[in-house]
Length: 218
Image: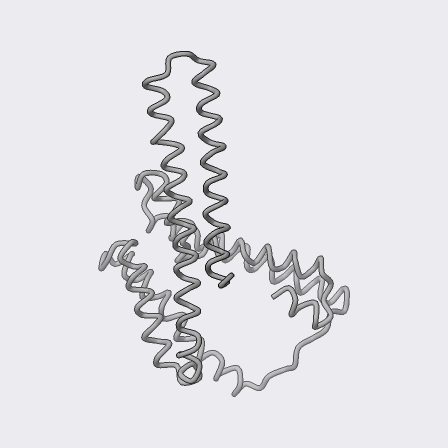
């Protein structure tokens, strides 16, 4: 998004700020995988459905605030404007976007309605998105080439997330419990805990780097 904005005449600082702030909205608005990770890291004591519900209003408020601020800055600095579209074109775009919105409604409706758990909602949402992709006429011609790339990106992201969770579990539950139980010297205990945390971080970064290398085909 940032290179495209720079090509269209927007400043680099403005493009970076808008993109980074917009990324925060995805952390709050459901279905946010960050909330699922947070719930799992908390031992499942915090409901994912409650987290999803709690993120709706803050996410919408941040989005609205960002829209108002962007509009003000764009008019003040006379940023380039896009081409206006007709009502018919706007209606066509709205209809095409219903496929993606329907996936969100299926996930949230299923969780809130008690049809399936948040963990099951991930599988249901992925399957629903794939079916809707098949139904979208404009995507059928590119499906063959994009499917393998999408699956590879999904595997890359999943491996990094799972390894992050495993590393966090290792640091919090695994080695620290062993050190607390079997090491009685306080200074040695502190050194081992710090070393364990440092080692886990290095291993996690190395694993993420390896996954990124493999995913890029290098």
